[in-house]
Image 1: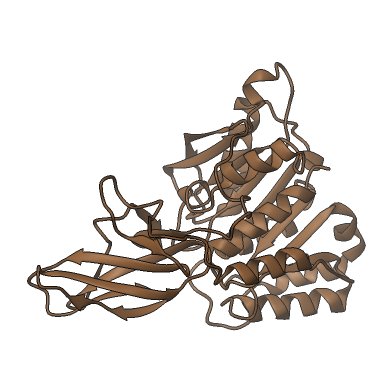
Image 2: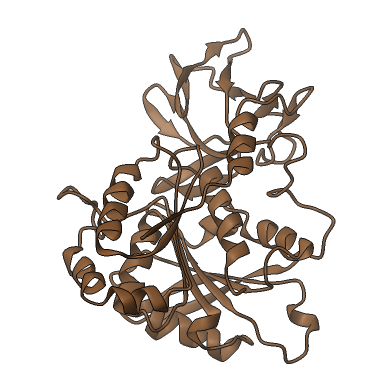
Length: 370
């Protein structure tokens, strides 16, 4: 049986803010390198770029679509984009056909390469994803050895503001996975996980929790999570080591990894989040996502009452019909409905993008460990 959770106020706010004029004069992007004036955000949520390439014949900006840049007398190239939605956007510069990152921007591992990033301000009053004057937690990088991969990997671990001041108090843990073409830094940097949780914890809307962001680029994610990541966290941090205080969530590829893991090990997690994802509905699945999904459907169908009782929160979100995973998710939810699997569905406009996944984490984290 399906539950529909449509936070209409948030949907309307997100939709209306996508083209809101949130700056009254040009402001430099949050991710412009020091002393660089570009890229910058103009009124109307447009982005302006300036690139020095005096010997180039053609220069473009690739940001949602390709924009031709105009050559200036000094050998620089400039352009202004259409109005952009709020939040984080990857982009590239194309110089005479070669796609490269912008030397004026910070770089991020996304789309499987080093990509540039642009942060478009949210509408006035929407401070959910902005640094605020509240107590701040910390994100630490910890190495771990991945048994199935036979190699060292990294995880990013968020601890809430109260963690180091609370004596022997123990905390629940959310294991939060990135998507394909990204790594453990995605949620920590592009996703602004610490900012989202700091703000929610300060307002009392989310329980203080530890968040573990591991490297999902593994030959066997489920095995590495269970054999390597969870034991390390539970032996190193003050956590409550039971299913009631353990959650697993992920976006895109991380959503499929989440589904595979919780269906194989429903006894380990009471809270499940699947963002912009769903088991692949055809034979053209990318590498690592084309496992025999019918075995998971069979497990669910054979004991639906057990699975329904195990998961206190089975939360699925999607970035509207423009999300590239929308059809996979729609088909999966239809099969869940047919077999009587209970879940909550949340949809917000924005496609397969970080603004959507920030929104998903914001809403999911308010539900868990209550």
